[in-house]
Length: 269
Image 1 (cartoon, rainbow, N blue to C red):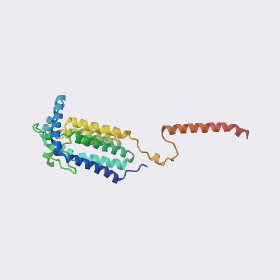
Image 2: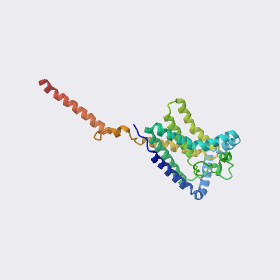
Image 3: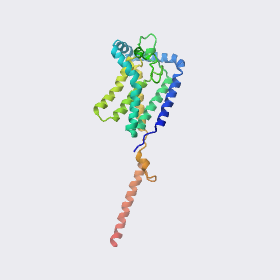
Image 4: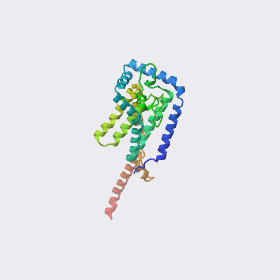
């Protein structure tokens, strides 16, 4: 039986990531000018590509009071709760798959923090003169959007909301057996992608970058060999791997040949 990792170690990893996140967020004043410039450049690049749908989607949503409020609450509460919920669920129900899932999530955050530090980007709602409306602030959560962990105001690229949502959907998809529930989980990142754009918090390119990072880290974590429980119970002298299997085959062949060589002497007796 595969043992679950100890809670203390898992909390230590979480605290280190939060400390680094807080350290980067603490340099907001230094990053502000570059973040605004990079945000404007992203939006201009999207216009050149013909995919700058953020402003139209944001303004239309803010005119629909109930829809704007629902999107704001989704943005504010599902990001952390859904991700941690699936992580704990995987730790409790699928201990053998937990380490890979956790490693992928940690890698996702490491890549995201590197981008936040090297390439700060202000969200669309911060860009002066473009006309974006901060739907989440209007819903009563303030300009920093509150929450247990204050968001990095200049960490729009890539969208960790999307990266976490893709991770959550993939891991939950593997945990459930019902086909209907699997498809339902796959809808989660799609809804999150729409929400982060219409609330003025992310660009379309942020969404794509966040999804790609999550898929890449999941693939990387899947290629890391998993420690198997039967390896821990295997006698130390027993060979493993392809070379070990080849040696076992040769040993069986040798033993079979030895038995055949002994057959004449047995008949003589």
